[in-house]
Length: 349
Image 1 (cartoon, one colour):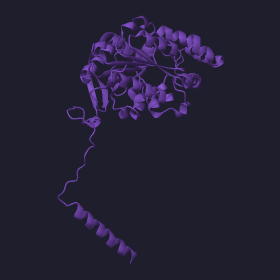
Image 2 (cartoon, helix red, strand yellow; image 1 turned 60 degrees about the vertical axis):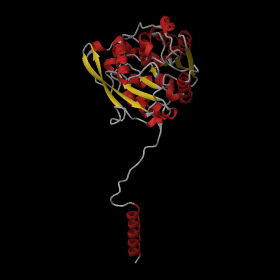
Image 3 (cartoon, one colour; image 1 turned 180 degrees about the vertical axis):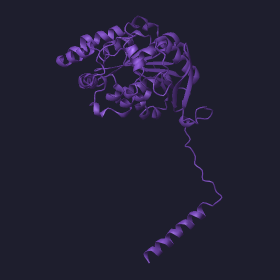
Image 4 (cartoon, one colour; image 1 turned 135 degrees about the horizontal axis):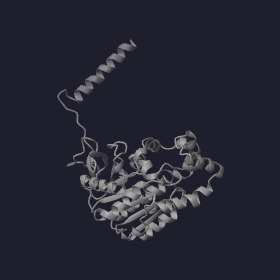
């Protein structure tokens, strides 16, 4: 009897639904009206904002991966990841903040990184060629002086500075995050400030492994993670590092990282060893934000100096931040970053 009553009830529900939705009626949905979601005229809607951009190089044409998020004709931020040879992935924390601020932004894997082509051409891993790559990406994405903000973190900060010194006529704003303007000064800070504060017995073992060029030895990272990474790269227990960060670290292209940065995690020894643009900073005339962290591998005092050397600078200090201040001092970092972009956009910088 109970089953029979349930069957009758189900039939009544189906009949009611049939009356409300005629068989010849097509169900539709409407996207909420929002300028940030207005993608009319875009050529990347089908791919969810992804574009593979052809890049002309001395070794031929290759493709780099980009992805647009959001829609704001007045604010477009191109994100330059670190490494060299890392990926856009560790910057994904910005997904939690930029959309709410109506900031249109572009993830971008530089040539040789993750989702982009990875040619086995050592001659391509040179700073001037990367600068020309960024300019080609800018042109392909139609970023202009009226809306183009360039963000660079770590190595991306070097690339952003170099781009600004050559192509700042296309920029509305520049963000240099966790990167000094001098690699010799960076090495000096590591030698005179960071290393003396470390456990000297552990440091001696790390140095011995480096002297033997035994960087692949599991013991090397076993020592560095608690001594260096958890103090100066991202101040959280390593096993609790956010997934985008660990994913990005797994995807670093050593064929780019080692020739340019060098194999050691305690200093720089690659092609960038003598790079120094400190004296050229006054040539940068666009609004510039420099971000530093108290526990960074980069000297926060040097980065404050950078903000004063450019013509229109602001310094954002993250008192709880390390090299990944985007994560370990997130509130300070993101609020300061968004405030800079909005201030420039509103003409209040």
